[in-house]
Structure formats: C-alpha cells, structure tokens
Amino acid sequence: MFHYLAPILSDIWGPFRLLESYTVLMAFGAGTAAIFTWFFLPRVWNFLPADQGRQNAVDSHKAKNKPTGGGFFIIIFMLPWLFFALPFYPILWEIVGCLALCMLTGYFDDCSVRPWGEVKKGFLDLLIALLTSLVLCQGQTTVLWLPFVKGSFNLPVWGFIPLSTVILWITINATNCSDGVDGLAGILSLLSLFYLAGFMYVVIGNKIVADYLLLPHNSLGAAWAVLLFTGAGALAGYLWYNASPSLILMGDAGSRFLGLFVGIAVMASGNPFLILVVAPVILANGGTGMVKILLLRGLRRMGFDVTPAAGTTTDFSVPTDTTHPSSSARNNMKGHSKKFVDLLHSIRFPLHDHCRNRLGWSDSQVLVRFLLVQTFVTPLLLVILVKLR
Image 1 (spheres, rainbow, N blue to C red):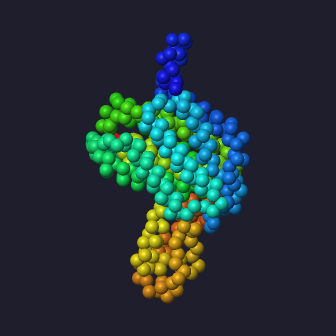
Image 2 (image 1 turned 90 degrees about the vertical axis):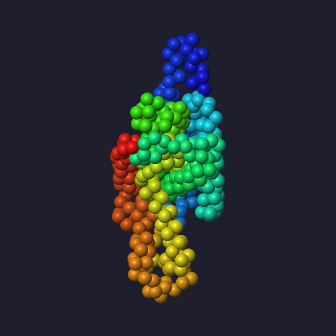
Image 3 (image 1 turned 60 degrees about the horizontal axis):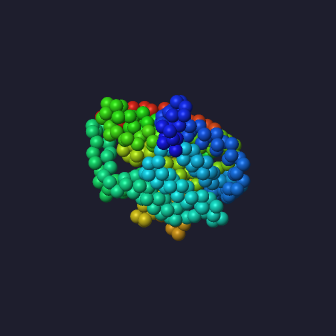
C-alpha cells in the first residue's frame, strides 16, 4: 500500500517519498510486526490448544499444557503489516496464501486430540510443497544458478516442480523435527530469514551487484526482502515469549510454516543449494533424523533385524520389529551390519535430543551452541557460494 501511496502523499509533504524506499518498507514491516506480535500475543494465546506432550521426547513434560499452535498468530499478526509494506505483486501474495495454508494444516494437527499420523502429515506437506512450487514457477521456465559454475541456465517447468517440491518438503519436515527446545527452531529460522532477506535485497535484487558476481538478477528481490523481513519481525515478537522457560509453543502451525518460508526463499534466490548455506544446523538437526528413519526402515524391509541391542535405548522415531526374536536374528547378521544398526541406534535424533540425553547439555547450551554454529558457518559458506564460481 505505502509503495503506491508515496507519490501521492509526497505532493502533500515531501518526506512521504521515503515510503517508496524498500529499505524503509523492510524496516517498517519488521519493526511493526515485531512490536504488534510482542504486544498482542499474551492477550490471545489462551485461545490456543494446550500441548499434549510428545511420547518419549526428552523433557516433554515441560511443554505439556502450555499453549501451542503459536504459528497461527505469527501469520495473523504479520498480515496487516504486509498489507502496508508489501507491494501488490501477485506471486508474493500467492506465496503468502501458501504459507497460511501450510500453517493451517499444522494448526489443525495441534488442535487434534489424537495427533495426526506421519503418513497423513507427510502427504499434506507434499501437496502444499507441490502447490507452492507451481506458484513459484508461475508455469514458466525458471532461471537457476549453481555453486562453482559460472553463469546460469534455464530449468523448464517439468524439472523445476519436482526439484522444488522435494526441497520444500525437506525444509518443512526438518524444521518441524528441530522444534523441541525452547526457542531453537524459531531462532535458527529467524537467522535463516535474515540471511536470505539480506541476500535477496543486497545481492540478487541489486542488478549491479548481481552482474558483478555473475548471478541472475531478480527484479523482485527487494520485494521478497520486504516479505522475509516482515515475517522475521513477527517471529521475533513470538520468540520473546518462547525463550526458556517458554510461555507459548509454536507447534506444528509454526514449525511447518517456517520450514516452508525458508524453503520458498531459497528457491526464489535461484540456487537450491543455498538451503545448505542458510539452514545447515536445521538440516543437520532435523533432516538427519529423517535419513535415520529411512535407513532403518529400508534395512528392515531387506530382512535385517533393526531392533536395538540389549541395553540400548532408542528415540521415539525409530521403527522396531518385535515380531522377530531379537537375539537370534542379531546373531545371524553380518558383523558390519550389526555395527551399522547399533551406530544408528546410539545416536538420538533430532540431534538436540542426543545432546541433552547423551551429552548432558542443558536446553540453554543446546540453543547457544547450535546458534553459534549457524551464525558463523552461514556467512563463510555464503562467501564461498557466490565467489568461487
């Protein structure tokens, strides 16, 4: 709204022309969304469902009965400020709709007396990722660039949609798996959004800088940055109350929406490998858990016994098969297979649970150490990504 009102209002008072500045719009969107969320969230969170606790999760009793589904209000509270700050480009508002849809699927799960099964949630995530990919490409060829390779190339719709769908599905679920320590998923996502917003505005959205770095220029880069900064502002207002000991939880409504948000910005940047740069800790923390599940289930389908060795505990996500006599089956396995399965069981996933349960880290230590890793690793990898080409 402000972007279009500025020429009219500047005739009344000259300084109103600043409302055309994307820098001002980014600051306005982030600041107002943060303050608005910070002020109103405590007044409405009692309307949210109560957390039921997660079976076998470390310290799940600490979250039980707290308001959950806070992601619902992160979206709701950022919408009015997007209306003022975000230019009316159809693709951006369609993306906002996809984010809201993803949030709602998570919110309905948060409200459910019996949590949805992983198949149902995974299928819904896949549909949302597919829909979002269609919106991102707008049915047209997409320009992509890759690390360590000069120039760019055109990826047709039939190639972009499956690639984007897979990446978005992974970011949704990796972020959801990372949500287990007060403030962890939120602060890591906040960092990712800030890095991506700065990259879209300063690098991809600036033709001079993009040409110098041999990157494809995105004419909507600055507008993307307004969307990202406004969403980051609303998230920051929520995190004020999610600091340990938390007063409210984001639930699936928040973690799934944030995962999609980060994935969307990565695909909009034109380089799918950027997800490894801006969200390395989220992928290592949550994504590796999905890899563990796939490996164990694959081994089980191949006829291997994947039950833990005697005296070994495992996390809630590990598939076990109690129909086989564990001791005799394990004795018939080859030595390397035994060691590999035992190694998988020796590491809890998400990694933040391993750090708390096996290494004895406190919640604060997990949060600060994970935050430090992502804070320092991302700028280093970003420089390598854009310069070594």
